[in-house]
Image 1 (cartoon, rainbow, N blue to C red):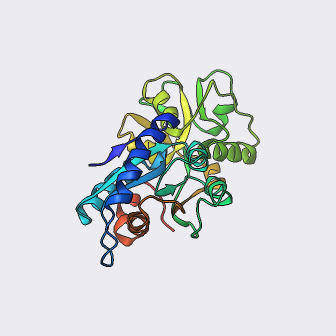
Image 2: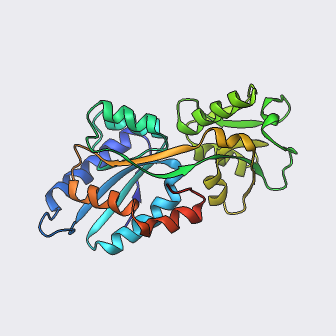
Amino acid sequence: MIRNLGVATATVLAVVSAAGCGSDDTTDHTGAGHVSGTVTVFAAASLTETFTELGKQFEAAHPGVQVIYSFGASSALAEQINQGAPADVFASAAPKNMQQVRDKGEVTAAPVTFVRNRLEIAVPKGNPGHITGLADFGRAEPKLALCAEQVPCGAAAETVFESAGITPRPDTREQDVKAVLTKVTLGEVDAALVYRTDVEAAGGKVEGIDFPESGKAVNDYPIAPLAHAPNAAAAAAFVDFVTSEQARPVFAAAGFDTP
């Protein structure tokens, strides 16, 4: 059964630590391709829906394996890993945050870019703020939400604003893309910049507006097993699964581009 640990550091450390100990004791290293125990995956918030689905498929393909997720901002997850939070796999929404983990020696294998994503304007159903494009983010009238600048969706937003010569005027900056999307679905803002996959995942609760500048900041998503993974065999198997042909339709249906 897949579980989501959340992103609070204390919760992650407490729950994942327990899971990590269990996986270390139960992993079966006999037989090629046979894994068991738990595999703990730290993954960008924008991967919530796709990784949840892929986790079910992975568990079905490996009876006895349990996938445990911690979804959140890639920057926060990288920091938790570098501070010693036990995890098996890291999937980041930007190479920068993966590099932060590599620089600390927490990743020794070369990360693999498995999907790409780009930004889209999200507005509440009916577009009550009459948003038409990126230029509206430079106006004072609409209520606007963006990701914090240190997280991948915020960094991508800064890139597109720079390329368009727009100074954004957000009313709020949130710590991950799902929090930004929630502002839109609740009608608390007139527009936000999120990933197009998040608009797709909202299932009609929001409307998406494409804008040409989004091509200036396409995010590569790297994944890698962690050097100190409590369940190294399951970590390697999970990364292989996510980067396999079998996973591609799940990502494509969600609106990701695959390399």
